Image (cartoon, rainbow, N blue to C red; front, side, top):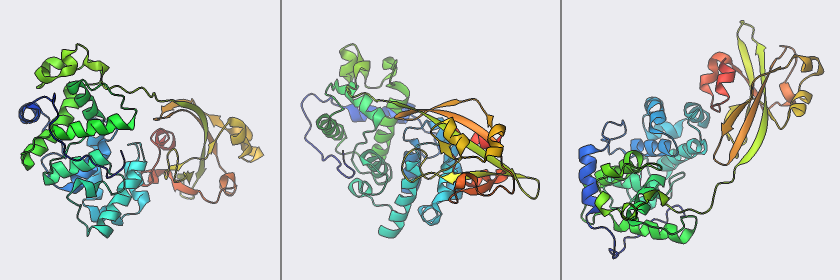
Amino acid sequence: MSRGDLPLPVAWPAGLPQGFAPALIAWQRREGRHGLPWQGTRDPYRVWLSEIMLQQTQVSTVLSYYPRFLARFPDVASLAAAPVDDVMALWSGLGYYSRARNLHRCAQAVVNDWGGAFPQRSADLATLPGIGASTAAAIASFCFGERVSILDGNVRRVLTRLLAFDADLAQAGPQRQLWDLAQALVQPDADAQDMAAYTQGLMDLGATVCTRTRPSCALCPVQDRCEGRRHGDPTRFPVRTRRLVRRFEAWWLLLIERPTADGSTELWLQKRPERGIWAGLFCPPVFDNRDALVEAVPPALADHLNEGDAVAHALTHRELRLHPVAVHWPADAGVPCGDDAGRWVRRDQLATVGLPAPVRPWLEA
């Protein structure tokens, strides 16, 4: 589904469970999650920030990043005015770093194109960098009471089980159909408070009850309306035939360290390209194999390389095997690897630059 291509309301299709929205709203108010720091606010900046952070990231992880981010960037104007490297540094460890770059771009678009105020319609929100249809719907429903449904991965699972929707979501047509059904389930006379509870209820149901494996059907507030449960096997939904193909790669990282005049140490880091893995982050030089790494250091240092234990690092489409190799660089040895695009960073200032999560422990050790 393209950005901004939000579903339009449709007539109530035959076979949709009656009373789903009221039952979910009542359950959320009674048993849903209420203590998360981004709940209880209609500030679109805070809701947007939480929604972006929570994409493919566990709540427990976001809980530590969210308050630090707000302390540094309390509003959209301060985020828009910050250097992108400051944003990447604060995001370091959350992964999926394109989210941080789009976060910065989005803040600048809100300030420059919308006068510093987030638009109130989901269709307008979905035109902003990094805001897809479901995130736009979440902001619009939580903050402005728009009667529009979210449809992230958890909600797809909830609704395909509820409806026993067995069309292949690897195809565009069924995805659009499910969007229409999700919108049809929204209570047509819901007020702003109802929409906030309904949207949060969809999230809570997918996160705590209708889980990917071993769903707690006995605790589900809509179990009597669930067609997947009635058919005896809700876990067969959703249906997606296209499977993720993972690629395996070996990366050799040269951890270059040298002493400073005051007795401290500094490390040579290069900024990764704007596209690809760890885009925009600072990282030690990366090589395809050990021989290429050895060729990049002066011959006098080739016998003084300290190779550490390799570490596996899983990404969405790739499985990396990271090989750290440390070397002490003489103060008078010149620019490492013949690369004047890198920079020396003091070890006690590593927190000020964005670093890939698996690399940071090696550099801080």
